[in-house]
Amino acid sequence: MEYTALHTLLWLQTAFVLTTQEFVKLSVTPKITAECGKEVTLNCNVSSSRHGLSIKHMNWSQNNRSLCSLDKEGNITHHKHTLSHFHCEYKHGTQLSLIFKRVQPLESGDYRCKLQSNQGAKHQYTRVELQECCGIVEGVWTGDRATCTFKNIYPDGDVHWFHGSHNLSDGSVRQHTTKHVDEGGWLTIRSYLEQNSSTVPYNCSLKSSTSGRYITSTLVQNPELQARSISQEHTHPGRNGVGSPGPLWTYLCISILLAVTLK
Image (tube, rainbow, N blue to C red; front, side):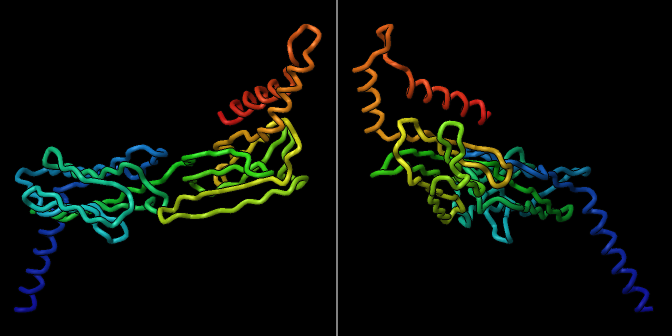
């Protein structure tokens, strides 16, 4: 008799838990693509088919590390477990939002929203992915070489040097490239060429290792040779009295071609 009563009690308790959990629902966006350098918001919405819902606790977390939590009084507590600037907001009595000013590479991944209420407990996941990104591009002439630097890069990429339409990355000219990863997961890529004898600018482009497309580029030119070329144009003007547009025209053509390629 005691055996039957105990099993009945356990069955009733299990049925009650399952029934109450069916009343409350938790909804999130399954996948969010974070745009480079822009704010990202993860919303977690609570709903119920019954009246009298009371939220006891909610939180957003990543890798079992709580980022922010909400108590039954509606107070939010932030926990600093990430490099990015973020904050949480609670609206309409049913929505807890996790807002990043900017997502860093190491912070992409799965985020969990968890609920505890008088009508049951739930949790759901949102996956955050970071799109291709390049923050800063610098092309300078240092010493006797063309150098370009790409900062805040995601994901990894390969540097391709061009001289006119010729891709110098085919090995015809030696190039040296170094890569460094900072604590947030951003890459800094620096490359330089062992060639400096042309008045035509060099094009330094970064090709994404993920999509295979060029995501950014810059032009680098020896300022001394450029000045010498301009001086010669003024000294030996063309027959119509206008200096030859050679290097400048080539520069403009490369810029237009590059703009079309990156679209």
